[in-house]
Image (cartoon, rainbow, N blue to C red):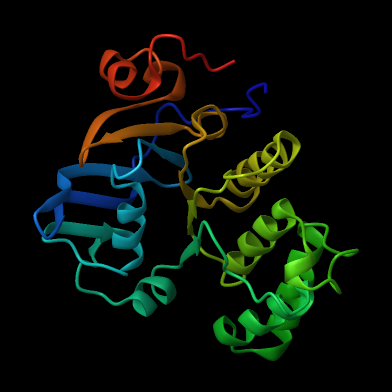
Length: 258
């Protein structure tokens, strides 16, 4: 698959971190999941996380959303320490949206009713709810699908629906967990284009974790490799695949972007 990213933010005229991890560590019993990690996700960037199973990718998402707390260190969103903030404050005050790897929608509701149900939770004004739902149906070209129940949608359609549900609250930060998992090539390309369009048109800062390295790097501005609780390397996709540590731990010698 060709690289679909039309541009990459290689440097930032005004560095404005949206999410910051400062010396964050986390253990489950005797198992160290994250070991004193530090990184930043800059405004209006697409940030990727790669690594083998158990490297800590999903744990980082859980820490950002507030599902779990670190053992030590700080997590900042828009410069404010949110380490002790519950999920609902991080979602509402800091406008973070999350797309899980599995589920995220009501199987027995139609696509339209899924959007309507979640809009009633996140949008108080009835007229604004209707406008937002109609806007997302148009943006994602759901017109022919809106009366189909969630359980009858294809894998790609379900992924797009969950992204649309996350966008109802107009988030400034969007977290995508294993967004390309178990999808065909054409569906992956469609999702890649959707993610890049959200950056270009809506200025949404996005963080993606996935095992599909080539597909993830096709959309990212910056990506990092996690292994055994540490950040091994972090750079632009073209530089990252050349990094010696990244090759040794994750890519191998034969990996190429194209």
